[in-house]
Image (cartoon, one colour):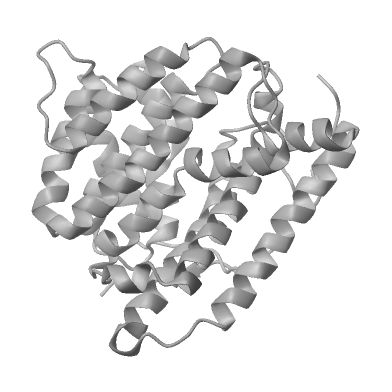
Length: 327
């Protein structure tokens, strides 16, 4: 494997921590051990321990009541477990498509067949709790976001199967789907306890801000996962697309990807500063934007903390951690 250095990432957002993160994590591990029928020495349970998913969500929602975090946390764990089984080089695109279609059907209310994979039955249970928590309008929006993610994972599997390296613009289009941010950004409303009207969410200014936040997270993840992706031949990654399109050496492509990340962060800040007023919805829009800021920061801190993606850790602009008080 080639040696490389990851330059400092620009991330000027303050880290935040949920004061009850340890309780949330303990309850989640106990809940998933029961769901999966695992004991504390089981390899899957140990992997859940090492992944610290509750810490990620606790950093994204440091003031949310625990009861509003549970369903979203279970979906987050489900999503990472799902991604682990489909985002590998040897998995055929047809299989990924079949599994994704079944998962989408479950989210739309279908009952899994009797010997369906356990993850589908777990998804059905999580969906039931989401339906109880949120309005049908939100559920429809969330399913649309999940559909975008499944579309991206199928496309990625096709690219790996074709042994193709995409040009940069096409890769950006793919990554905006497969990174999954539209799902977690939609859940900001559910966890924080509000529902924005569709005309507000679809406003060009807010739509553009969401896309830029997605790019920030996607480029950071590509840099964090680079060492792992290099082991999986033809795994899509921004660095590889930059290398091919511009004929760059690995380190030069990494440096350019970091520049793209940092420029996207600056663009996010500029767009945020220039958001128009949405009248009576201003406070909720502010909460939604704060949620995206927290996701950008939490994703970086959690990735470094868990070492989920790679051994090497890029430097990140330091900021004091804020422990939030829950009402």
